[in-house]
Amino acid sequence: MLLTLGNLVTEHGNNHRALLGRHLAGKYELVELAGVGGMAEVFRAVTHGAAGFRRTVAIKRILDHLSANEDFVSMFVEEARVTAALSHPNIAAIHDFGQDRDGAYFLVLEWVDCITLLDWRQAYDRHGELSPWPLVAAIGIEVLKALGAAHENTDADGFRIPVFHRDVTPQNVLIGSHGVVKLTDFGLARAMDRARITQPEIVKGKVSYLAPELLKPGSEPSPQSDIFGLGIVLWEVLAGRKLFEAPSPVEVLLKLREARVPPLMDLRPDIPRALHDAIHKALAKDPADRHRSARSMVRALANILRMTPESTSAEVLARTVRLARERMHEGPSAEVAITGEEAVPLTRKKA
Image (tube, rainbow, N blue to C red; front, side):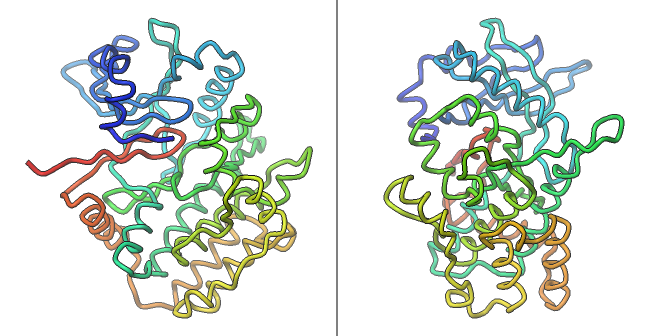
C-alpha cells in the first residue's frame, strides 16, 4: 500500500526522520520522505558536487525489514542493472547505485515533476469528462517508443538483449509538467517474480495488467505481452474504468485468461474506428494476432493522429497536467517521485 506523506510520518515517522539529512556516498543528501511502497522507500534528495553544484534526485532505498532477504536484495541489484542499460528520453533514468553506511542498497533516480497517467485519467473522471482521445493516442505513442527502445536494446557489441517491462500500468506512466511522457519500473516485475515477493497489496494492483499467455507455467515475456499491457492501459484511460476487475486476484486472473474485451466504441462512440481497432488488436488473446512490434503500433497510432486537426503537442499535454493538478489537489503544483513501484504524489498546500 502506498501512503500519503502524512500517513508516512505517522506510521514510519521516527525511522525515516532519522535518515533525513544523512549524506549517502558522501554526496546525496536526504531531504524529504517522498513515499513508501511494499518494497522500498523513496526520498527526495539533493546531489552535492564541486563548486556548489546541486541537483534534485530521487533515492530509492530497500525497506529495512527486507534488506536481510537475499532474494530481494538480488532483485534490487537486478533492477539497477537492467534499468541502467536503457537510455531513452521516454524512459525514467537511473543515475547511480550504491550502499549506505548501514549496508542497504539504494538507487539514484531522476526526480520527475509530473503526475501519473492514472491521476490524469481520474482528473477527467471526477468532473464527468471524457479523456481527449487524441492526447491518449499521443501518450500511447510515447510509451511505445520507450517499449520499443527496451525491446530493441543491444549490448556494447551490438547484440540484441531485449528488456521486457511486464508491468505496464497507469501508475508507471508519468506525464511531466512540460508534457514529456516517461515509462518507469523496468526490470522490477521479472525480478519480483524471481524473489517471490507476494504481498497482497502488490499483487492486487499488478495482476490486472498481465498478458494472458504469461499466466501459463514456464511462459516468457515478449514484445506482444508488453503491448497487451499497454492496450489495457489505453482502453482504461479512454473508457474511464478498469478492464479486468473482480473482487479478488484469482477472479481477475480468470478474466485475464479469457481475455474478453468489451468493444471500446460502445463506451466511447466519439473515437475513430481506426483507434478502436488498433487498441483491440493490442488486446488480442493470441499474441500472434497483436501488433508485430512497438514500432508497428506507433505507426498505427501516428496514422490516426495525422487525420485529426487537434494538436497533441507537449505544450498542450502540459496544460492538461496543470489542469489535472488543480482538480486533484486544489493547489498550483504537486511533485512525484519515481518509486519503481508507483509514483507517489506530494501535495503542496497553498500558504
